[in-house]
Length: 122
Image (cartoon, rainbow, N blue to C red):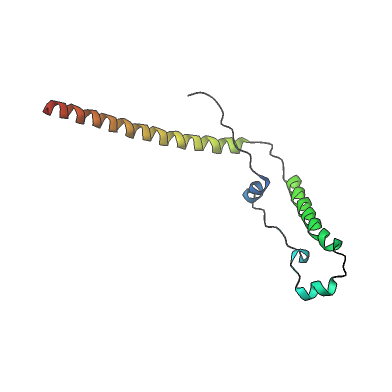
């Protein structure tokens, strides 16, 4: 066995927030709710630029809100916990691997014995 460290895949900001117990659901605003035909007709003045800008403004706000929560997350100073968890997972994996190898080895021994018995009968 070599002394190589295993690399851990980086979590996305959403996964990190979920791990830390933060609410990751997006807030909805009344601007994103569709208007009824009656409301649209009464508000329609021929100029659609304000209606076209509304979704863009909402998405920009959402992006800003999302990027703000990313910046507010505390930086990790000590990764010792992560290393311990990774090491535990590695030990479990190795134990399973050894168990599988022993089982396979026993199957090979059994097959060899069966072949030897078959040859002796012939």
